[in-house]
Length: 408
View 1 (tube, rainbow, N blue to C red):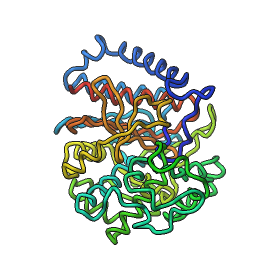
View 2: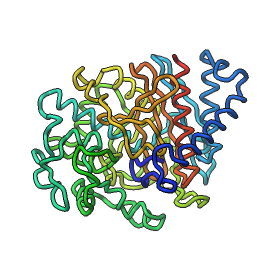
View 3: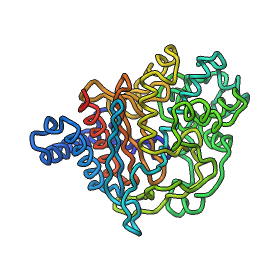
View 4: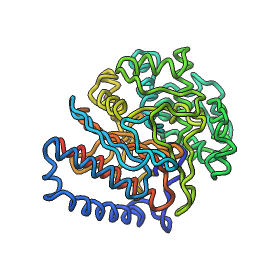
């Protein structure tokens, strides 16, 4: 899966990146699977015009992802005031219990979008500037080993153009099931996570490249707390969750368990290896880079609100959408671009906005139209290893695109 939080960098084949063999092979699998899926519905996508047909298509989509090896899948589509949901698979491999309706899950790096919204709200209030250097708010924290916090701005952090090393690429708890078990309940302060990154030199000079780094959003969270004098949890509740009525979304702090009902999360560490239950862990390992817990209904509402302009002033809404090429994603997601906490992906109906999310045992894919009138969320409770992971990623994004196109 893409390294939204905790996953390794995209692999390449013989040094290839853009239009790589991996990307072409993944797209071939995705197209083949699409052809099979369309055979299930006479007449292809035209047959699922209308509410009943779209519900059947959504159900077929989550069932297909389950058949690709994901233990449990939830899918949700919000279209204006209409909401549809579907589920497939099991929520617990031990008991065989079904995936719950509108169950809780860890959204992973979808969290970054929430953090970016708060930062942009502060920009709109004149309390922050996108040109503010990190050192203005966190003096001396990003320094040494080739770093200079006076040259890295808030925009660089929000857009992943800072060059700061991704701390999760040197995170022992993610290395193996044994390491995960040893460290799963460890607490991390944000400064601890930044310190891991500072042990490694930058990937490039600020503004001279693009590379996804969770460290960027740990720093964004620290800046939010420094500017406001309040916790990440308090700012989140006051600025987003409360106004939108998102009662099933929260930052869990040190809470290692998920509220019920929820599916359990399973991690595969090596291709064809066993699925390891990794549901419980201390989410301070992710914090503002990926700690939020939510439900499909809440997350679709958030994305609709964001793209329809309910959370940001017009100037900041425009800044949110100013994108650059997501350079290191081109091998698997060619044409993808990154704004300020949001991603743009090309699609059959002109492309869509969203942000993926991965944590141990769970992944999230979503998409929303440019006007926010239609949003799609898929929650998957398994992280596979190797080529199956990439196949699931590509097919999930294809299904997001199909659902968004159905409403056009």
